[in-house]
Amino acid sequence: MPTLFRVALILTLVTTVGCHRSDPAQVSVPDGGDTGGTDDTDDDTGAPATWDDMSILAVNAPDGYSIRLELDGNPPAAEAGDPLSYGVDSSWGGLDVEDAEFDPETGVVELTTERQKLGVTYELTILDGEGEPIDGLTADFLSADTFAFWVVDFQTYAQYQVVAERFAVGTYSVVYVEQGWNPSGAEQAASFFDSNTYPIETELFTEPPDLDGNGRITLLGLDGGPYYGGYFDPINAYPEAQTMAWWGMHSNEMEVVHINVSGGDFDASGHVTPHEFQHLLYHEHHGWTDPYWAYHDEGMAECAVHAVLGANDYAVDFYLWDYQGKFADGLSLVNWTYALYENYALAYLFWTYLASRMDGVDSYGEFFDLGSGSPAEVDDLIDEVLGSDMNTVQLEGLIANWVRAPSGIYGYEGMISFPSTKPATVEAGTSSVDLQPFAGTFFTLDEDSVDYPGTEGEHVVYAGIDSAGDVDLEAPFDVAGGALLVYNQNFEYVAFEAEHSGPDLPASSSKSFGLLEAGISPAWNDPPPVTPDNLEPLHRWQEATALRLAAELE
Image (cartoon, rainbow, N blue to C red; front, side, top):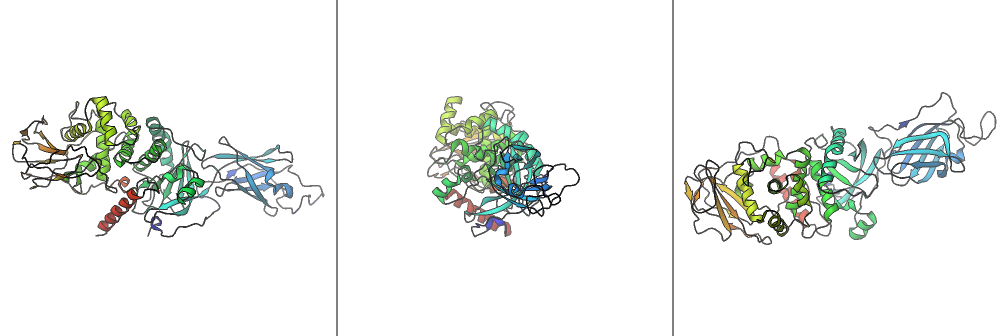
């Protein structure tokens, strides 16, 4: 059973010495030098031991709270064991040395420090009795070869600790991986984050916080088993004193994006990291929103993938393949179902279509800035910018998914390049579906023209599309060689009552291609960013995940 589903809350901090990816800083040393001595006098002359002719062999930080210093020579033992003999500084601030232990037999000094800043290069300097640097006794080292992180068991929502090793350091990122895992691509992930993900998303959305003061985002590789592709935990955005007082939960007090590496690679698709980083920025900008609209947050996360990668072809292909038939059944845009990637893809298509009607990718930033992304806010934005409304724009976007006009309201203005495959249609023989508000689907029919049957729901509207891609919005609707779009434009989004769609004519054919050959995007598995005060979204995700795993075992 993977570590994600550990039941007990592990409170033991496991500390390891050394890191297989990060060698301690090496300093050139002249030949010779006495590493022994048990007191502050020279063995041969009886003269007091001094720092003269001493050198630093190596220095490294085995974990986030210690420094290991190897000396060559015979230093004064009392001073070598005094924490005031050591100064540690960096461009990101200094580091207090709280304790020092010197072993004269080995020439090794073990320093205890306050918590180090991950990814930071520190400079250690040995100081004289006046607190002044001693010439030649300075060495650089990278912080925290290993670090103990609090992570979440999403089955129980209990926390446990993992010790992770540093794999890479970038300009805006530092990569750690849970011990026992050696995924490929960690350095490439850091490089891509620095050159693409970070600058694009921060320019488009907002600057990230920097609670730990290191100017970097920690990309933490974990054994997530089959349960998630990655996640963002908002708990880490607050000081531990607050999270313990509010919820009795630990905070890493830093900016962390969690990536599942149990598949052997560090986000090889490049999809998970920009998705989860958007959640981090979303929380920084919005905080705990109530109500929380997942189609806004998760939709923006999928749009972030588009912005970073230049496209989100997976979401488009997933929509067209409809391997579970969810799109054909009619799926509500705003009534979110967790652990269902169809909702992610539908939200991505809606926001991208709306962006194509405005300023392209730059409009993602405008959507991100909405208060909560509620349908009412989106409706107001569309009214202001387009002189239309949300229902109409969603209807037009669904038509665009079929028509793919090179320009105009029935296309994406080049933002999405569709393959030749048309969207899924209802199963052959189906005469009606029950549509929730903000849901629509397509019928293929033997008839050339279709009228309202009179049994359709109060808010159900039709649009006809013929074989040439011409759109008919007035009854009777021309559908010759094309399709009939049925859509529920009820703007009520509390109860989501379904309505009979009609047209009460049997669909002539259906199109659904089954499981994608490329597999399923890991983003759909990701647990929602939740507050401990409202775990209802997490419980829905847990239920959906349990059903998914049970189905995969059949």
